[in-house]
Amino acid sequence: MARLSVDAGLKLKGDPSEGVGEGRGVTILDSGTGGYDIEGAGAKRNIALDAVIVQVATKEGISRLTPQLQEAAEAAYNEEETIMQAQTAPGDTMIVARMETRRQ
Image 1: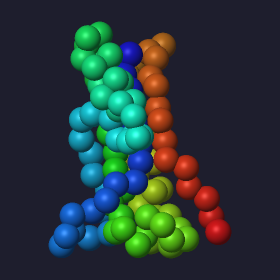
Image 2 (image 1 turned 45 degrees about the vertical axis):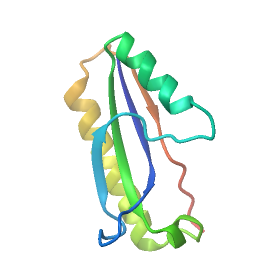
Image 3 (image 1 turned 30 degrees about the vertical axis):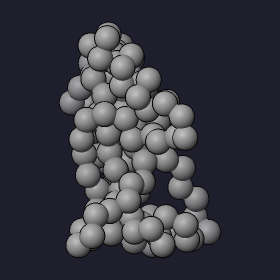
């Protein structure tokens, strides 16, 4: 079994917006301990936890979806597909948590 989370993340100063990053862990952040609990459960069961992030500036995170961010979201989706194909075989189970994108 593998787990993959996809979300938007705050970019660092000097980094470009609309960048797509890949890493390990859980991208879903909540006000509680959800991300920590998911990572702990994955570690105990030796389950891979992969993440794809679309980098956004603070203003972009609370604004309407721009065409550039839509393209970045589509690039993240393609990266997600690549990870799934590389890490799973037919019949495997994979849990995917995605950010929600809406055209406005």
